[in-house]
Length: 468
Ligand SMILES: Nc1ncnc2c1ncn2[C@@H]1O[C@H](COP(=O)(O)OP(=O)(O)OP(=O)(O)O)[C@@H](O)[C@H]1O
Ligand SMILES: [Mg+2]
Image (tube, rainbow, N blue to C red):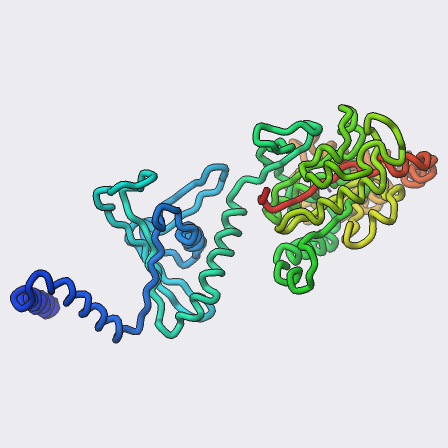
């Protein structure tokens, strides 16, 4: 240890000597030029290259600085004893980052780089259009010179992409509705938005796990598919049709999709409700093309007051939505009556994936029991489990009805299961007498032809990345 301090002291001595030498040899006006030259010589022999990314670029905020900060906040390799924490407006997530003058190593495609967060006091402000922060913040990225092209070609783009992803995930989702029926808000938009905090996720959704996995993979594939859609010249959009009886989880599925992908929801009501106020659904939308578009008011029904929706109007409308503006979007149509939908609406490209939301099946029931009662399959008595399995399909009970029973008796788990079994048996018996609920529904007369065009989409949701 003593030796170490001795060498350190001699090094300081040498440095002080060099400094004095420079001051003696070079007059003040040449001193700065000498230091610059010295640095340049050092840099020539150094194997490193440095990028400075300052928070403020001239007078504008440097997007790359913010992106780096977010990107590094997601780095799992962050270590040290102090991190800065931030929570952005409209966000319920907290992100952490490097504190002042802290540093971190990151690895990209096998290349290790070094990031340093450099914070210095800003010098007395000269004239500026806007007040600048007292501190000057920036990141310095140190890389090996040989890695320069990799960093410039892909690493920085990768950081921007990751940061966008994190930003989107951290931001609260919004639910936009066109319930105002055509009138525009103060910013000229026809949408009203509220924070979207629906707790439904694919974990809480009760449905066949294989089908659920298939849908999740399809969504993920879509979300990651920008390059594919670009390569094949297709618009980056996908349509899903959710159909099934009321209370089978169609709206819950839309919420789960939005939460899964981190998309905002635009909810368009295309049924009688939205037309009660006398506005056609076409006029409710912001797209100028659609506002002047044909067929959305009056239409084949020919009724005045715009309380019917024609097929061509609906197709115009959805195709208008499909094609407008840039980024990815998902359309989810929901209906209780798929049999009444025109094939033109169902074709691939408009509704690419048809998902039947069925009455509660046995695998779905097990999910509900776990969600509501905390019961695992192994917690349940084998005999009761078998009885539930035998009766569940015959009962044709919706997950909504099953949930109601479980909510009511949730404080006493055994009773909740017994009550549910009783309700299922009762329903199964009733169905047997009535010849089956499904058959009954199908035997009802179809609405008149004009009605077949009309009101057959119960609701129509557009999931979108938060872009407009
Ligand atoms: N598959 C499901 N998984 C979990 N919960 C469900 C499911 N289906 C229904 N529920 C429960 O029932 C309630 C009603 O479900 P939801 O609104 O999603 O049904 P829906 O199919 O959209 O009905 P409608 O056709 O009337 O619009 C939800 O709040 C949820 O708690
Ligand atoms: Mg619904």
